Image 1: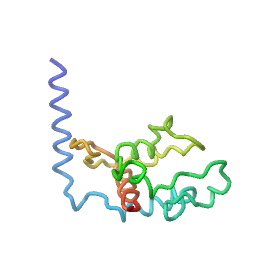
Image 2: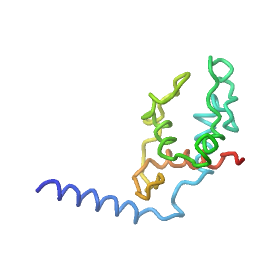
Image 3: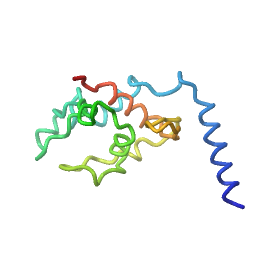
Image 4: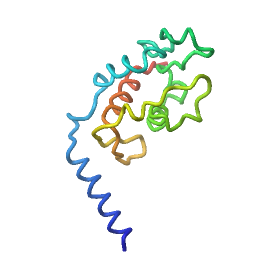
Amino acid sequence: MRAPRFSLLIGALAAGLVAACTPEEMPQASDGRALFMENCAVCHGVDGTGNGPMARAMAKAPPNLSLIAVRNGDGFPRAKVLSTIDGYAKSDLNGPNMPEFGALLEGDLVPLDTGDGVLTPTPRKLVALLEYIESIQATR
């Protein structure tokens, strides 16, 4: 009996979140640029190519973030990128450990489709950073 009530509650909360956030309020790439410069550029460089000032001190250069889509058959793997930023996919990283930014990216939530058609409540700053990284993808 509890499961249906819980499901209904979660469904109502998700619907409220989606209804409360219009496309104009969704984070844009421009919102994520400052977060990138503050947290990522030191290793990945201001252009995301892996040439930040800390990269020279690392045994292995940080990945070129502008080639994520190219490395994934011209598709941008939104869920995988989110998991890497927030530290969830730490075991998938090879080379120097990337700091976990999960705690830094907490805050209000916005509905995000990571590619499966399902809107998932995701921290606004995390979505903004994702949008910025997606915006710097190189084209072939």
